[in-house]
Image (cartoon, rainbow, N blue to C red; front, side, top):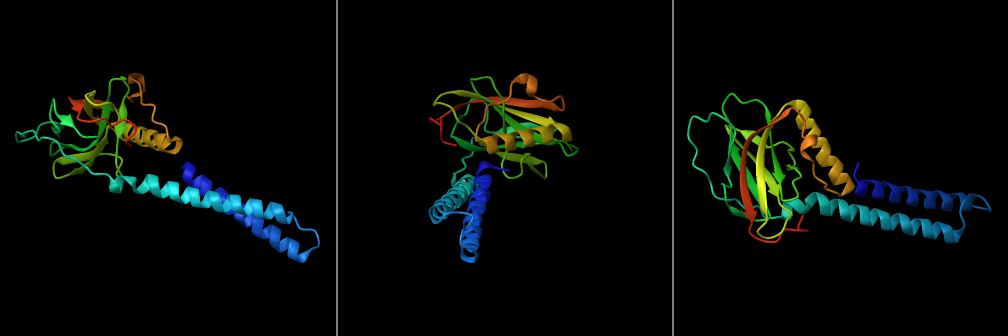
Length: 212
C-alpha cells in the first residue's frame, strides 16, 4: 500500500472520529472530544485526504503526461534467433524518457525485462503498467526512464527471466514506489533466474536528474 493511500485512509478516519465525537456530544452533556479538538481533528483529516488524493493522482497519472521519445532503429535480420534490443541503438544520444524496443524468437516464452545501469554501477529494472516488457508478435517494448546528468553513459540491458525472477523485479519496483526511493540493485541482488541476453550503451542528450 502506497504512502499516498495510507495518508488518505488516515484522513478519512480522523474525519470519522470528529463526526462521531460531534454525534456523541449531541447526545450527552460531555462529548468524547471537546469542540476545539473536534475542529482540529476534522481539519487535519480533511487536509490529509486532500493531500493524499492529490499526491496519488500526481504519481499515478504523471506517466500519462510524459512524452515518450523513440530512438534510432536497428535493422532486424530474420528469422530472429535471440532476444535483441533494436531501439535505441549502440551509441545513441537519448531523451530522459524513451521507448526501448526489441524482438524475440517465435518460440520464446520467458518474460523480458530491461535494466538500466548508469555510472553508479547499480541496476534499475524498468516497467510501465505491465511491469514486464510488453510482448506481441515477436516484438517487445517497455518505457525506459533515465535520471542522470547530460552526457552520462547508461547501459541498457535486456534480461530474460523465469517467473521467480520476474516476480522479484515486480516486487522490488513496487517497494521502491511505496518508499519513494530508488536505491538500485547491486550485481549480487540480480536473481539467478534472470539471464542477460543483450546490452547496448547510450548517453543522455540532456540533464535528466530529478525529472522522474
